[in-house]
Amino acid sequence: MSSINDNYLSLEQRYLFVEVASRVAAFCQKNPSAEIIRMGIGDVTQPIAPAVAQAMHKAVEDCCHSETFHGYGPEPGYDFLREAIVANDYAGLGIKASEIFVSDGAKSDTGNIGDIFSADNVIGITDPVYPVYVDTNTMAGRRIVFIPCNRENGFTGDIPEERLDIVYLCYPNNPTGAVITKEKLKAWVDYALRNNSIIFYDAAYEAFIRDPKIPHSIYEIEGAKRCAIEFRSFSKTAGFTGIRCAFTVVPEELTALSADGREISLNQLWDRRQSCKFNGASYISQRGAEAVYSPEGKIQVKAVIDGYLQTASLIRESLEKAGLNPIGGENSPYIWAQTPGGMPSWDFFDLLLNKTGVVITPGAGFGQGGEGYFRVTAFNTKARSLEAMEKLTELVKSL
Image 1: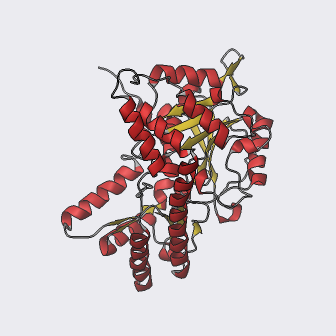
Image 2: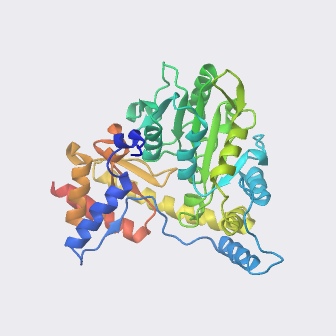
Image 3: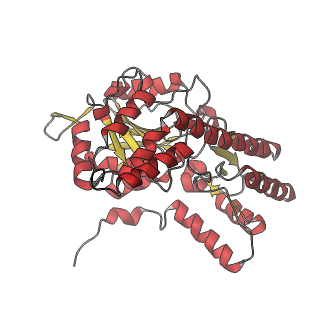
């Protein structure tokens, strides 16, 4: 009989957002007339920008004619998009188009990047954390060291004393909405350089940063190209959660050791992995992503993000008035708040759902450090978000 990868048996029975969806579905089955307001999963609600839609319509038209038809594209992405990314997101930072790898999502890339690393690597993961980082390394059988993130360290973690082979950082943070200063990010880069460690930097929410002092990319820090891989996404930036397009930056000077002690280019390894296991993001989605960088696209995309940030500010204000000590929601679409009276977070999730129909995400789903907290997203409409906050604050007052 065939055998399984036993590491999967160490996982929670269901992925966090599958569990959330299951509980909501069970509630809806029992209460078919109940009105649900979804403030949990980080899915966007506003349509894609007109400039992006126009570019995608043209790309579809291209595929309708033999002379402009596109089949398989280059696995790392079309040059037109890779060059646009370099010119707009990394101007002056020394990143080259050959270091950009276009994909179908940052979730995929942050989960798959472990393919090019040994299972012997010790992994540092901030806690609370996006569960994909934990689950994919558990699947691989790697040892994980959790780095506590709390109010005392600004939810950015204290620099470890021990050496870790790989450290995951995500800022603006999912789930807490916290941001990291350039000084603190430099401390992490210095740690990685001292220890020959590698940082996986998830910058999927960088487009929400409005504070000019907050770095958008880890490559703004000197030396980061020698120790960091960066992940970005068009999902939250431009509403591509269903369209699927993202990219990963793997600098050509970044290396790691083979079993026999040779320094191996991680850029070349990731290129080899992608060319084997991935056929490239679609031509249509990449043309749409290219249009995000057009003059019209920039204006339209920024307006949508500004709207989400306005909603986030209103949510945070409501949670502050309710005495739930929120953070985030200023340079991020996420707001992280304490459960009332220290209530276990899944208990608060169930109570809120059953009493009001409002769906949030329980902090315990993001790790031990998330217990006693919950996450709210600002991706619903402003009106529905305010309605949800009214219901939530009324419930908290009644407790």
